[in-house]
Image (cartoon, rainbow, N blue to C red):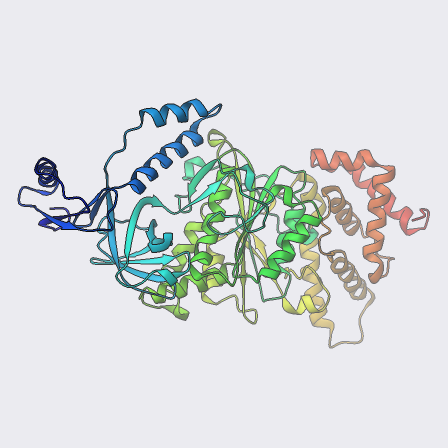
Amino acid sequence: MENNSKSAVLYYSVRPNKEQEKSLLDFVKSKYGDDCALKLVSDISMKDGFRLVCGNDTYNWNKKSRYEQLKKRINEISASADGNIIPLIRESVENWVPSVYAEQVGTVISVGDGIATVSGLDEAFLGEILIFNGNVRGMVLSLSEDKLGCVLFDSDGVVGSGSSVMRTGKIAGMPCGEGFLGRCVDALGFPIDEKGKIEAKDYRPIESPAPEIKDRQSVNTPLETGILVIDSMFPIGRGQRELIIGDRQTGKTSIAVDTIINQKNKNVICVYVAVGQKASSVKSVYETLEKHGAMDYTVIVCASAADSASMQYIAPYAGCALAEYFMNKSEDVLIIYDDLSKHAVAYRSISLLLGRSPGREAYPGDVFYMHSRLLERSARLSEEKGGGSMTALPIVETKAGDVSAYIPTNIISITDGQLFLETDLFYSGQRPAVNIGLSVSRVGGDAQTKAMKQATATLRLDLAQYREMEIFTQFSSDLDDATKEQLKHGQRLMAMLRQKQCAPLSHHAKIIYLVCAKEKCMKNIQTDDVGKFLCDVVVFAEKEHNDLCERIDKSGTLTDDDRLIITEIAEKVVNGYVEY
């Protein structure tokens, strides 16, 4: 027998007659073998039907079971119908015949700290949703020969040892749809912004295979952050995975928020996943995006520090499922995981409670696989698959700048580059505090326009030479004129790369900045005035040469004549011919 049981138990309030009893016995023998016996037990709680238990299978024939069947049928009609559903519902109710089907029911062995150990569900699979007492939901996360390990998504106060648990046959999923845009939801898709119910159009499993190689195409379209230091030297392409890494309070989230704000009117949908953050921090991000009109194309998936470890664990996967929904509809999507360090800590907590062996830094060995199967789902799909893309910006927090720790090295090896934010740069006033030497983009020029590649040219080399020269000359007071000029030029470059928060630059503004730097138009400008000077050059160009700005934005090219015009504008600003 499938359930290793030689007897079936029928619980009833009204004893069946001989004919009914024979029919039930015939059913049990046909299903579970001829040697299976039927035992009848009176149960006064069974007021409107009966319950047949055969091993792990339970057959409920009562009003509640029939009502749930009818409710499920009506929901299926509502989800599939496009027009008037009233006639379809009426027809279904009139012709509906309830059926008896087996529900697999197990028993809770132990529960605590959001983890339940369950026996009796031999056919449950990894990632399946289980229903405990009080409609508490859980997910299978560990399989062994005689028991299951489950994480609980709701309070475990009503779940106790010996209580029943029922299979659903459904894998954990996330409701999806355009109605989620502009909303803040939890890791299960329920709204937490007090703006009412969200109408879902689809339901996607939180875990799904990454697109195959043949279903992808190369990353060659830029996804601009609006941050000069990133777009010029460490460009991000649509479908890329670029890690943002650094100590706490170095501006990691600020880069992510600026990138979202810069996607306005660029047909990019953004998903911001907050894992283990303070609720006040998430609210601050929400208000910032709302203030700049970015929530119209953004979804916030939040599992705050106050939520359980299980909710923090599934939040990135839920956000990724939502992003995949839009990617498969040929949309370009940006997803930000803030941050995966706390995600790994949540998974470590769950794993240790499930009894898995700890490894390096007490993380289980499969923590790498957990993050790789999440980040590998980011891709730029081929034209045959619709051409949509999902760009991932995972955030990882380091301690004392240690990028050689377990989780940072794991995610660095998974992603296509990293932006390393340096604490010393941040507190010296260089913001964004991107370390030029340790940061890299493995896509590089493929994710840049021709204009950006031409304008950037030797910028990174000049900055590297400046940093080396600065270190070498800090102990020397006698410098030749050439060295002094090189140091001054480097200081102006660093000043050019400073940028205020929530003030992303347009494409043509970045090109103008870089041309001014390349042609050394700032050599007579004081370092503290570089920001104002460049801003004035852009304002004048937009006012007097708007055609130039539009041409750079639309074509992504920069001609010699364009470069000459920008240089002339800069000279006029330097010489004071323009009033600001």
